[in-house]
Length: 190
Length: 318
Image 1 (spheres, chains in turn orange, green):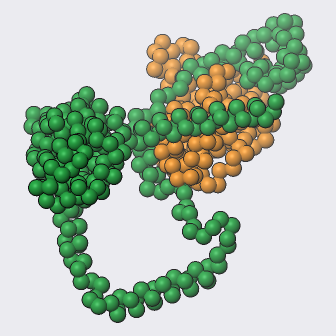
Image 2: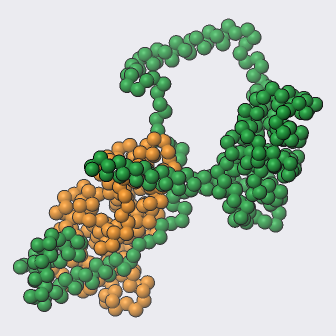
Image 3: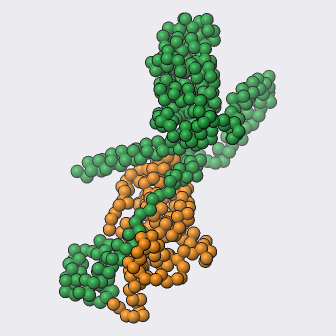
């Protein structure tokens, strides 16, 4: 797994201290550092650029407002992910059913059958949206934020064991949706 | 091995969380069972498919949008004037505040002449100094729009100069800089040379000969400092020193040199630039540049602090 988003925790903490000392511009450095990965997480969670932008922005603003409550024994980005994921779940909850991008319609064929790149991407995104929020969150944090089991557990405040089992079930479901794996329990194990 | 056990190992390998023992077990299994190999390939295929969506580009202006929402709420709590560690009972503080209010009321009531007398001029001056809000119809640009001006090299050069950015951030100063006499003075070669070379302007303006020259033009020749003499001989510059706002701006560290810079003189000589200075867009762009610069500084500081801390920790561990 590529860990392209990893940055130094000590730099984050130094910036957090500067913000708490009244240097608001230091928060700009934190936003600059994490905007790409946070927006990517929001986009994969929500499947819609506009909602993802709002959720990312609101998450950063909330993080700023609650910065005094940030416990420095945790990683800043884990804390940010938690705020962002909650923000995304709120957007999902507020969506009217007809706005849901997940839909119930079955896609025809697998993404590998799709000749068009955009169609292929759309099918993958739709499959992500058809996961339950719990499953989607772990998949997104693992595959798009490069978080380890421990980091995901810290961000979501759940045990590592739960992260592993959710990832397992989520991947199984995505395999069914995207690669035509047989559903577990219906056709037996492959 | 059962299927869930195998899947757990394959998933662990995919997520790089296996111990060397587990890794060896999985490799052995895959080499012995074609089914296990196929399952591992399927999970890898799924992972690459998901990750093929790749990272997204953050929306333009996100940092600015966030900062504009938080910039009016800095975190630092104003420091108490009481020494650190001294707990001050709230009742005592309220008592002190109440006593101060009573004393103030008595002084105000008894003062002769009343405290309000003589303040009219101050209020009047302050009201005169207030720059009216710029309405859309006030912005009259020539052939070039504000947006075009903001994209010029001149504007870019101004934004890179911290002193100029600070000077131009003040709408009142921008308004004063549209004065044609002041623009002519600031474009004058002799004035620019003196602004470049004069040192400690703040201190020099307090010298008695300079104060006398500011009070009476006839006394300019008595000013000893050659650069100050050149500056005071120019009426517009002398007027600027007499003006509270301009004087405050000009004595800032680096301001005199900034006023003498080529970029600044190019800007004030440009009609479109002068018109653009009144535009809210100009102020917005200035604020954005200042924030970007502050952000870059904060990042650099954080990096330097983290590096210093790491070095100190490494030293402590040795």
